[in-house]
Image (tube, rainbow, N blue to C red):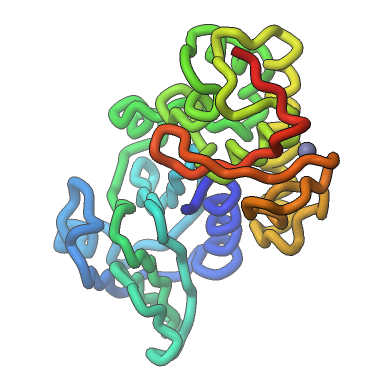
Length: 265
Ligand SMILES: [Zn+2]
């Protein structure tokens, strides 16, 4: 499922391929992915415009095409973008296709259709309306802010990190990776964490997410000492003599080391 690092990779991909190209047509193949704007409205608003710049807030991507108008893309569980020219390169589950004057297309592919394509006036408005917390990889998301948020949270630390309303960008995979690096068990209670642990998690959060963006979210390009290339129950932990275990946390299967990740409860 696309999390912040994936969205950042998609954003850079769009910047490299589809920016500043005149949009000729917007083809909506499946209305299920549309938000408040109809296919007709998307076509009317985007036709003749160009994508000017991109932004990210957690798992959302924003693409500006007018002074106060942004295309909003959310990738749900299976979404991604593909820029291509020939029909035979079209991805299998293209739900919306932006056709450019240069003959190329940008497809928003999403097999499970849980994402969203919409239009917003601005990032702040959209975030407020949809209750999206601050992006965790932005510079202004600092230790002070993280502490303030964590101080108010109760329950599993893994769930706290994944709560998009409090802080945006972390999902199932990267919450595991962050806690693995911080040496804290995912079932630890957030309200029991001390300052030291909160600081450790914060540091791991920044390091892990930056590393994932740098590795273009390819598990094979991640350091061997990370959980991602070893995300399988029964494997040897790359950090200690422990074993990787998996279990469900609030409905999601999480992975952790049974030895070096301390349970604080
Ligand atoms: Zn370990």
